[in-house]
Image (cartoon, rainbow, N blue to C red; front, side, top):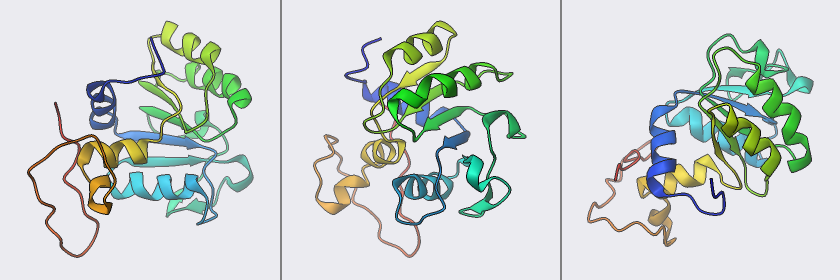
Length: 173
């Protein structure tokens, strides 16, 4: 698969079918991107499991943190990796040892490892690299355009401003 470009339908299908997300490298520090993504994914209704060995047994965003993927007590649909590119292969190996296999390995912005991606895809796992699920969800839902950012999505739907978290959900194409 060409990981330089993803069709909107590929990303949309992933974000609308996964229910459980393990975030490897989740941080309890509120100014870290992994904290923002953890909170956002929880707010969107995903069941999120922070993975951080140094924080295991404590909570991040109100969710118990685990030391490793194998410790998560539920099936993991998507493994979101917030680690350096060279750290990806052992994480993918750990994910591929899970039973059942996750549906998706997602590598965050600037995280790319072609060998690990090929290995995951050979096992039947979808792969996304160098993307952020928070940004992709907001872009596909039209939320990112609320701030004047060109999302590449055209819609006649006007946001309904109300109290609380705003969302149209992901628009299927």
